[in-house]
Structures are given as C-alpha cells and as structure tokens.
Length: 405
Image (cartoon, rainbow, N blue to C red):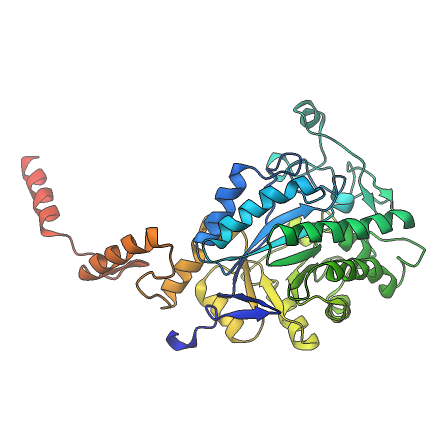
C-alpha cells in the first residue's frame, strides 16, 4: 500500500473484517412507511456501498412502534420488517461493504416531525397530512423544551419490556444478515435520556448517581449481547458530552466506555450533544474540522476501547492523519457522504491507493480505467487537471468561429 496508508487498511473486530476504515454514519432519512423500507432506501444505501465504504450503517431503526422518532423511521419491532432489511443487506454486500444497523428508541424525542419537514414538534398541519402523534416515554416526565410533548415516566415493568424489545430487534437484525449492530445512546434519545442528569431525575435505582443512570443502558447492552452471535461486533454511539453545564461530561463517558466494554461493546462511536434543543448536534455550536475527534482520541487512549471519530472530517488527508496518529480506529462520514457517496473511492485516488480502478464495481471500473489513461495522455488526472492542453481540433474550431465573427 503506497506509503503505508492506514485509512485503506483492514480493521477487524471479532469475526468481522472491514476492507477499510471508512464508515458511513447512520443518518435519518425519515422515509419509511410503518417501519418498512422503501425503494429510496435501496438506492440511498447501495450508493454508499458502491462508493467504496468499508462499513455502511443503516439509520436509527426503531425497536418499538412507540419508540419511533418520526413517522418515517425504519423499524425492526416486528418480524414483517425482516424481509425488506434482508434484501437491502444483500444489495449492499454485493458491492463489498459490510452492513451495520443502529437500533434506537426515541425516548422523549419520539413523535416529532420528519427533519426535512421542520424537525420540531408535530403541528396541526402535519396531523392533517396524515402524520400520527403519540405520547413519548422517558426516564422522567420532562419535555425536551417549550412546545414539545411531555413524556410519560417509564415504570419498572415497562423497563422489562424495553429490554426485551431491544433483544428482539437485535435477533431480527441477525436474521436480516447484518454484520454488526450499533446501540444508540446519543443525541437525546432514550438511552441518553437515562445517562444524562438533564433528562433523568428518577429517585429509584435507575436515577441519581452515575452508576444508577448507567444501569439501564448497560442492561440493554447485556440483553443484546446475550442474543446475538459471539462472533458479531457490537458498537455503541454515545454523546461524549452534553455541552451544557450540569449535564453529561467527557469524564462520565470515560467511566461509561469502560463499563460498555465489560458488558460486551467492541467499539464506541463518539458523537456529542442533542439532549436539549441547545445542545450541540442541533445547536449553533461552532463546529470546525474534527471538532469531536478529541472525544474519540481520549476514550481510546484512556480506556483501550476502539473508537470511531465523526464530525466535519471532510478530506482524505485529514482522515488519514487521524487514524495514522492513533486518535481513532474508524472514520465516520455523514453529510460529506451525502454530498459525495463515492468519497471512499475518491479518497483512495487522492491518497494514491488505486490500481486501475480495480476496487470500483467493474461496470464503472472498466470505463474509468480507460478514461484515466486518456486523461494522463493529456497531462490530467481524475482528481483534477495538472495542465489543461487545448486539443488542436478544438483550438482550430475556436479560431474559425472567431474569424467568422
């Protein structure tokens, strides 16, 4: 590999080996119908797989109908969802990507608008268009903010049902053929609601101290670990900090990361915020390149747990430097991948990891290999021109048009 490029080296956890370190983050598209995938999802996710990513993660997928964040969330709360997921997984794997899925419960953020329709509480206009509204559930009866629905506080009996729902959804993910599962503990959804004192004001064994607030998320991890093959990796996405005074901190995340590892988590996917409307992922927080990378770096260094870095990682050179320097094991792309689904292939070209487009699907690679040789003959490269020679015929035509004018 040219110059020991690490971004395009393999990475293994348990029995799963990724062909490179590029991961497509789970990003909500809010386009399912009653939890069922639609044709859009096949085009959307297959493009990332065709684009060269080592791992493509399916967006937050609801473990219960009530746990949907929006009416458009995919689901694995019933067996009828398996077939569509299995078809999508097969499609992605045909292009050489591993397939992961993020399992989630929306907690107090459940029953909200699809992001592209407002990303706030459901309105009368939304209901008139056919959207359904329901009462969220959360550790405490605390709303996300003014104008948002107040959730019902979860009872101890309901916790039993939720643990079982996570385990059942994980079993369905296995049946659908996913290579790994990520448990969503970030961005203001149910498991982060338990973790953060901003959302959890319980007075029983599931609230109060850090140990108590971690209790239910860790029970979920153990329930999932118990029903999936030992060969299957488990990820956890966390919000490493709430970015709000009195909330969850990076020091709390270090404690959590150690406990997650002991419970069976193989990698921590490090994001941040989202627990209140003023918190990070949906705030005006200034975000620069790699602004969340220090969280992945610190958790990796201080706990020994593998991590994934996410957040404004746009260029191949920056991504390569992060993994070369040991700041994270995987690089997660979100909106950059929406802008360029073929980012991984383009990054390989930019970093000199390209052998005649052999990693591209052959229907593309054959044409691109011929094209690149033609470009080289004119002093150009696929990533941009080094010189721009004007072919003689084009120049002659331009001069002819000029003289006629």
